[in-house]
Amino acid sequence: MGVISLVQQMNLKILSAAIAFILLACQQTNLPECTKTDCNCSDFATQEEAQKVLDKFPKDPYGLDRDGNGVACQSLPRAKEKTNAPFQFVEPNPHLKFGNPSDANDKDLNNYLMKKPQYALSYNCDRRIPNWVSWQLNKTWLGSVDRSNDFRPDPGLPQSCYAVTPNDYRRSGYDRGHMTPSGDRTSNKEDNSATFLMTNIIPQSPPNNREVWRELETYSRELVDRGKELYIIAGWEGKQKAIAGKVTVPKYNWKVILILDKPGGKVTKTIGFWIPNDNSVARSDWKDYIVSVDDIERKTGYDFFSSVPKSIQSQIESQVYK
Ligand code: MN
Ligand code: MN
Image 1 (cartoon, rainbow, N blue to C red):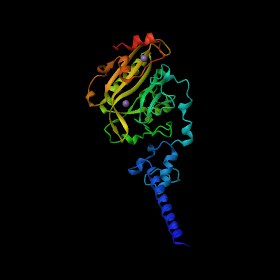
Image 2: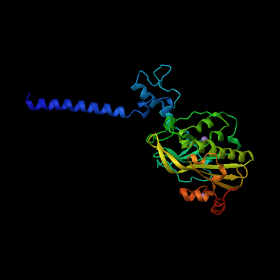
Image 3: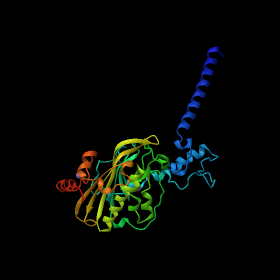
Image 4: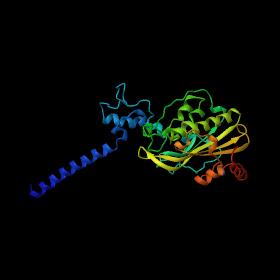
């Protein structure tokens, strides 16, 4: 064996060791963020993702396999179910009856349309919050089911889009603010639980979520108690900051409501709200934030209620609700 081939052989050994090392390093960085602090089942969108962490840490320091049968987080959906997520197959979707304000679709990950039985939304994968969420509200959605409180990642997002976990909001100073309120989906457990998917959640300042926004939600249900049917769309505008690195905290929340005199009835009025998402709203009245829908269309570039005839749209959307 010549000197040259010996050197070549050694180089090969060094090279393969280096490759093995890089592969190991890559595997480490593929582990979810929570492994740096503490993981729990709500950090994962699927059982398979949790299983990866358990396989990596068989002593189960995070308590993902409490019954010790080797299967992590058995209550989570399986990846196979993920591709069969219900929103793909719900059509026509009542929550889009009066339009899709941003032409959300299944191609653009920052305007990604998700249709669920309980609401429809446009998701923004870069911002890690929905652009808007749209839902129908009438008496059929209201009952007496308790708040399920099962905040969790949305298994319906495409693989390439990070699924926000409830922990991403932990110690941020912001509330996990519902767009479709838990209180608007109380006729059965499944509907209520759907409002706790993180794709329906935006960071809200505590006085916004707990006071103004909540009072507005209560007012919407009062209109339903009086026999009306509502089509509500809620979203945000402007970036204040980010939490957990990448979840956008908006400067403003807005909401638009289309009021029908009765379920399936005549379009009567619209209401718009433009609310600062900060502490300045503490102890204020939700009525202070009423604006026209036209005003919100100008500020956001969206077209709300586009399936209402143009002449009626221009009439009702220019009014400031009283
Ligand atoms: Mn809320
Ligand atoms: Mn419009």
